[in-house]
Length: 141
Image (cartoon, rainbow, N blue to C red):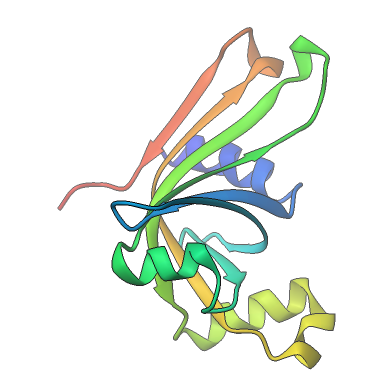
């Protein structure tokens, strides 16, 4: 399971934009967000304003899903990641530093930062064989 997570993290580290889906139970929203990722916390860190539809949804329902993909038309190179997690206000100072290290220009914008604590990843990686899936999920206590 840890080896699967390392393969997923290697993919995540090569990208910086995710698509994120949210709902308040009635309204659906999808957006694109720049991210930083922390391997130890298995968390994305993103910036977003509270007046957006997706944040308004998340304030009512903190469960989210999303994806990170490699754009290619070559079938043998297709790679993509789907994830599920819990979207939370960011309180961890180390994670804040991770975001600003990745996007130093954002410091001047003083963005509202959020944490997406991941509990499930599914990665498709055709470089390992057509339709190869790599699954990681948080261990149940």
